[in-house]
Image (spheres, rainbow, N blue to C red):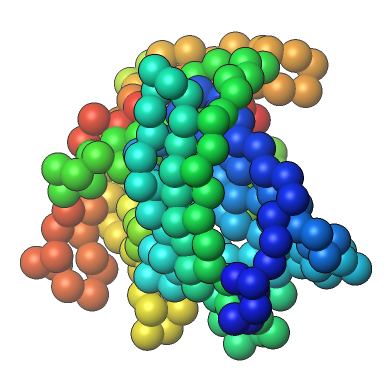
Length: 246
């Protein structure tokens, strides 16, 4: 359904690369949709393109608060996946006031498996004891690293390194350190992230040149996050593991 009107799907396919799945579907009216999510049920992105290729997509932040996505089932032995979804898609995925459409639907499809060019990429940890898996990231740094990892909840993991060629070893850090991992939480009242103060440890286990343009950095981390405006609001982030490319 798009804005309450039924859309006839003429072709749909699902694929999987490691823990990430994607569905692409086209309709008889010339529109098409693609969505990505992980096997843990976290939405990555859903986009809709009309026949003129105008696009709308889900709000990027705290997705589960603004869009309903359910991984109903995933059968890894039979390679089948079933999902449902409903909510608003926006012209600007960072602006809830931008023009939007309402979509809803479900897919029940077999999926094919594809091989990743760089296996094992991703970041995961436990936030307050709960498993957390990133679904996307973006960079604010150029020579230095300022990478923001998000999933479909309110949490963000921030990775800051003084240099992409950070040396292997152990790093104890605080909020003022050059190399650190940090927690932020999305505030729906202000539509901004609150960055928590941080004290913890980081281990860079490897930093290798994958190609002339790409480095692969792997490591682990754990830290205590403290709300800067409410010191009693402390969150333990543990079991952090990452393999990321710069």
